[in-house]
Image 1: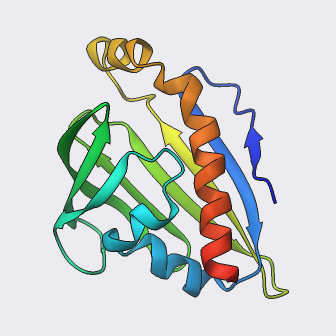
Image 2: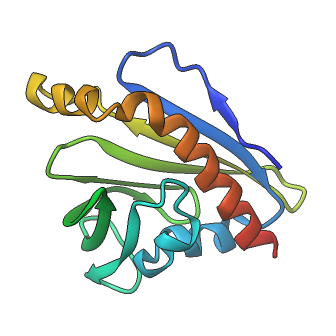
Length: 154
């Protein structure tokens, strides 16, 4: 069970895709619940939800406890939300994480996760380069999608 890492031909965007044998509603249920994010995080950086609503909506803010070498907290804001189809959030650094769901009509759903730093300024891009995030993110996203698939199909 593997996710496909996509070639977007863009310096500051990365993406991965997988097909999950579950309805868009079931999958979206996990994506829209911050408390569930640590269950399918392939980077092992998401520790737990700290604040915000139980279920996300457009404009919702939610705090997460994170750890990349050292613990930290981050507040995200949902900037795109289409029930059972699309959810996107960003935080202070302005890059976004998006999940797009396409119902394949046979009881399965194609899920694409995209990391987009194309709106970032030079300082933000410097940080991404310094932390090697642009090269690590595709593998982490693929792992996240495999974990999400296991959750939804299990």
